Length: 319
Image 1 (tube, rainbow, N blue to C red):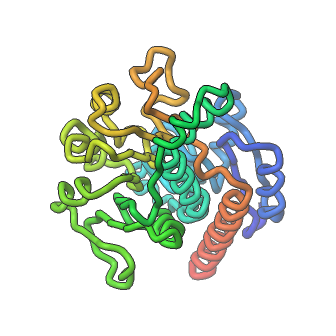
Image 2: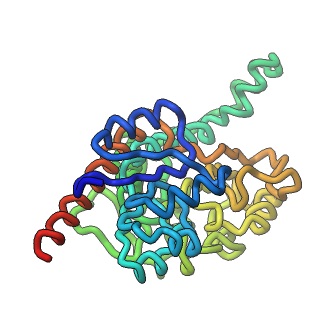
């Protein structure tokens, strides 16, 4: 194979049009689409791949990939990539972090509005005709300029969330380990100020990577610190939330509600404790799935592959 031509294995599940977009973007390379449902073919493709595009890769799979030089993560999180094994083999890891920022920001805003206007409840009542003028008069909504959003984390997605909701005059609190002096439009609090941040928030939106420090972050204590009228929104990883604690808080009315785009087990199992809670909205891990986000991810992947090719050719010219 020519020096600048790579074997690229795409092993994550993609729609046909997204596959076409990748092939067009990486046209000078040999692109193979193969999932783990075809074990023999997948193993053979993995053994000869220079680049793998996926959101997961185990230690065993990395060990089989003797030629692998780049793991292009299809998404922002690397918690399902065996990063230690990749590092030992000198494999570069790149993500598409930021490509889905706008999509996720719009999802957060959508759910803030859903809860603020009680749309699931009133939409259902309106469809059934189960309302009267007295009910209507007594149901007075607030406006977002009267509400406070606490953003837990501050990176590509969180910054876009702040930018989107700022136009609606929501009050913003960012809870992060490191402050960003240039972001003067929002109140930034450090991690020890967690109780203060949660107590003032009407909405708490999680935007954190999954790691040892964040796993189970939203536990009984975290939920106790939230006000009874607050809503939790999670678009990061399901494992950030202790589902037993969340279910108990929702049943007891300790918080107003929650919107989860991610859960620990996906799809949600039949016997999950989160099923049938009236003050819980669950969506199928699609907050970042927009056509613009996919185009941005494809463009990022192309740039990263091109950079990898350039680096490899430069190294070989020196040897």
